[in-house]
Image 1 (cartoon, rainbow, N blue to C red):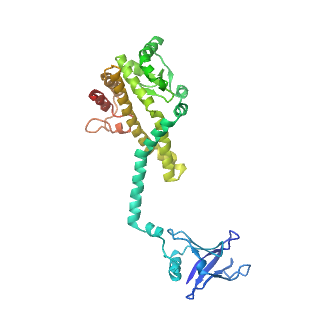
Image 2: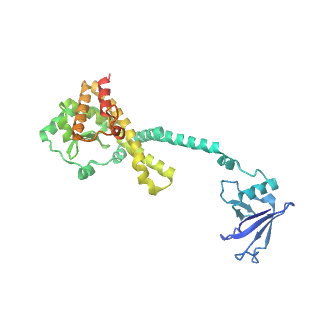
Image 3: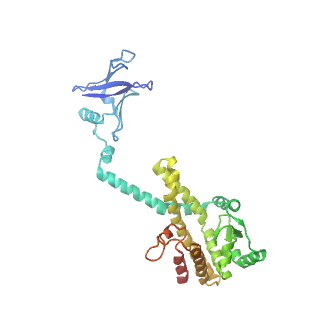
Length: 357
């Protein structure tokens, strides 16, 4: 039996073409050739006798070259795995094919492994990441949590303009909010007013609750503002912004680990990560809605005000989109783009508020 390969003497990194020879007498020899293809006349002899009892043959793994080590650090490396398997059988030193190679060569095993891997990955993304982010978010000190979100100063320099509401109107709203905010001093809530963005309200990790001028002007009753205040307090209480930041980082890390390619990170996380993150956001919005409704009822504020605030927002954005094509609407009249919204469908939230008991 002759096996073609390369010989390394264990002293230098230079490999030389060689042959491993086996005869029925269990005599093993390695013949080393020089660069011209002839037996080497240098320090190594033409033929190296090998004691097969001291051979260490690497287990087979796919079609990767096989290493056979002997006499200390000397190596014979060959891509001829089938010949090495046959040699193992001849020598009677063990199984010719490792259990790992048998597994990787089995189609049912490969299919089962793919299914299990995808199931574990899906479970990690859908359940593991949100739970881990929740645990971490509540373990982080407040000052760390507040640093995970964008500061209001940054938004003031990029998106917002100063509020156009009169000082008296701003003070009126702050006075209205004051007794309700006192119950949540641990969240460090602070109400801010800004313009430069359409009707919106949101909370930031540092405790700032921002109301845009358009939002303040569209509501019909100040108790609707209280409804939204409690909703934003719900975001702060449950540390939603911190959890979203952590979840986004974890999803990005998973994508990098799965693909192993940092160059594709923008493309891969641009859509899949966004969709996953928005899905988490919808869950957060529902949780904040539930928080608002429960605390409104405890404070004696009719929960109908939350539904009315949502209706006014719905009307506001419907007017803003007036004339837009309805080609993407389904049979129920809801746009397929509701799935990509960071909030649950507005009508769903209105119905939930009115059904709240």
